[in-house]
Image (cartoon, rainbow, N blue to C red; front, top):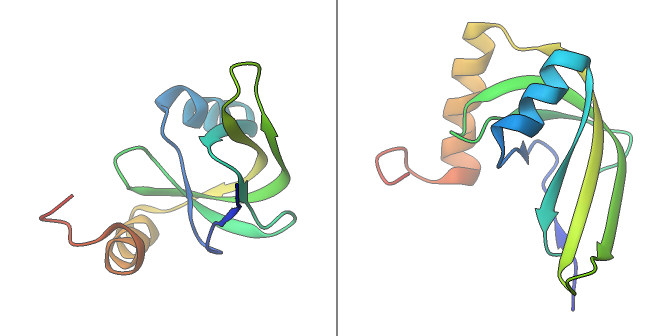
Length: 107
């Protein structure tokens, strides 16, 4: 058992539904497998399931627990600060591939 640390600019959604909720209502949550530590109170870049940078969000809460199936999960609650412009998205997405996601041709 151990915690993984999420780096300060990565908040990647695995579900389009979770991302839609955040963008539509200004607040949302996502569920990640395993225990993870998110930087509560900090602003981070949110990425869509296709690794595209979409918004700046503030992490409100990060709750790591075992669910009823015995799986380690972390729920992350956040609020939307603002959507990224197309230029900001392009630059942040390119940087994320270089720093976090790996080469774009391999993804």
